[in-house]
Amino acid sequence: MPTLSKRAKQTLPLSIIICFFIICLVVNPQRYIQSIFNGMLLFAKNVAPALFPFFFFTKLLTGLGAASAMGKALKKPISRLYNSPAESGYILVMSLISGYPIGAKLISDFYENGNFSIPNCKKVSTFTSTSGPLFVVGTVGTLMFSSPKAGYVLFLCHALGALLNGLIYRGKKSEEKLLPMPKAKRDEELLNTSITSSILSVLVVGGYIAIFSMVIDIASDLKIIDSLAYLLSKPLALVGISKDIAAPIVMSAIEITRGCQAFAQSGADIKIILPFVAGLLSFGGLSITFQSLTFLRQCKVSAAFYFLAKLTQAIITFVISLGIVEIFY
Image (cartoon, rainbow, N blue to C red):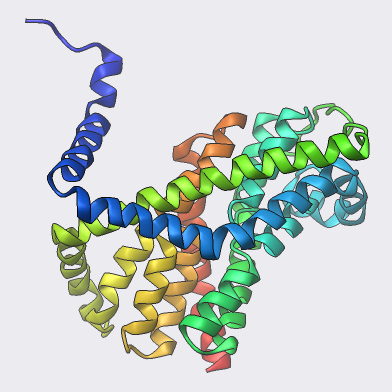
């Protein structure tokens, strides 16, 4: 009887999961093709129009040398706080403005240009992985919670969590001699490169949104989310927290947009909800994690390291939001 190779044994659990999803599609194609369509529709109507301009303009700014100019302005605080290259200040600002997964994409671009080493890519990824105000304040706060105030409180907690998280992973200052920023390309060449790169990056994000839309529906239909929520509700009840937010927590850990919507519809006290939403926004959910890793794997940032960094960022954000929510509510 043939034995499995080491590689086959390592990939066996993932292969089983993939086969399971294929079987679900075959057994109920109408239901789960509709899930994919709904994910694509969500992407086309809400995500792509908001994300594409940010991908495009950050690529243009990088090509025009804005990273060096902004890096010089932020060199001292970034260097002292995070022992990171000056250009990481530019990535931080763009990530805070633009949101997931812009930070990961820019880190990958800097690595490919020879500006960042692998250790610096890992270090910078710990404080430049954030959602943007368009989603946090506009979508979550204003549209879902009908409270711009809640959106601003969430974004404040979210930004502080990222900044504090980077201090944990600052390590020693890199002594490497990095390459200078590439010279700006001709206008038409830069435009073409920026558009092509942005389209491909946005399509990657759209693919993950569509797939995870199906994953959530399969998990819901098989009562997996309900079962996990039931298990989570027990420890929540011990500390006096409503079991109604258990399911939104599970959903947010998978896909943050649908999870935030579930939080808003739960009817629980907003003072209880906001710290959990803030922490989970910093974690990003599995969908955003895989989106970011698509770019970060190109610069050798492992999934284990990134997952750990996002977990600590979520915990830090949750803890500081407990105090901040008390101040504003």
